[in-house]
Amino acid sequence: MTRRPAGTGTFEDVAGFRNGRGQNRGAGPQQQSQYPPQQPPHYGYGPAADGEPEYFGAPDPGPGAAPSNDDRPGSTRSFAVNEAQGPYAQGSGTAPGSWNGDEDHIATYRAGQATAPPSGPRLHWQDLLRGIVLRPAATFWQMRDYQVWAPALTFTFLYGLLAVFGFDTARADVLNATLSNSVPWVISTAIAVIISGLMLGAVTNALARQLGGDGAWAPTISLAMLITSLTDAPRLVFAIFLGGGNSFVQVLGWITWIACAGLLTSMVSKSHDLPWPKALGAASIQLIALLVLFKLPVI
Image 1 (cartoon, rainbow, N blue to C red):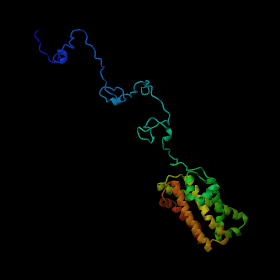
Image 2 (image 1 turned 90 degrees about the vertical axis):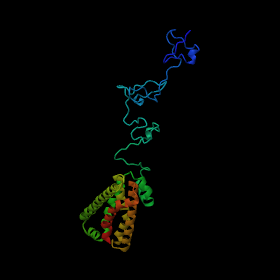
Image 3 (image 1 turned 45 degrees about the vertical axis):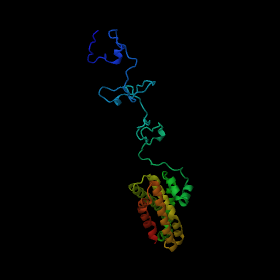
Image 4 (image 1 turned 180 degrees about the horizontal axis):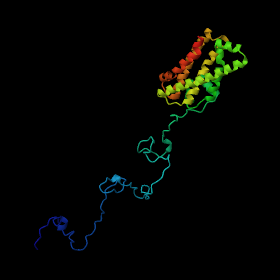
């Protein structure tokens, strides 16, 4: 039998076909291979449209997972306002791939609130006064987010009532006047001292914010008023009995003013997270005003 030359694209010259295997041409439909065709990997994504990368497709839930209609039109999921969604939730503060779904670790900016929580509970007014004298730094840090209006206004008002008697001329005028004239005079002086304390504290808070501080205005102003009243109280007590021009009273006035400068600087530094040079600069106007109003007139 004459052998027909092999045509182009035929398998007759292959060893298997030369030995008679696979020569079942015309025996019926071609048998399917026992190995199914392999599909290209999708890397967690489903099939995409023609001409698009495969990551444009819907996420592949994987084998055994229940079908989800979350991303289909009309079937999207609804979430709460504060519910974090995945590792890229806004303000999560975690790197991609390290999110653990715990909402307690989500940091959200809220305007007007303090940047750091209080370091301890609010102190009672007695503990507050004791802390300002004995451990001022720790006390100011603990009270940096608590306003102290009640003790500040009370002690400033009492200081204002006695401030009149710290000046020799004013004390003589009050004592020589009638009761109906001296009482309004003393009360108006106390109110003026409170107003001046509020204004000076507001200036200190504004300067601290301008220098990069982040503290709240109420704790700063109320603590500043309380500090100025407490530090000048020893001088005022001796001035009432010895007179403002007494040399001991004048030396004591300078000492209490330096103490007031140190306490104000520490308070502004702790309340606004500022280094002490900036804190001293923020309190400088208030310190100069206190020197002019209460110290220099008696020197």
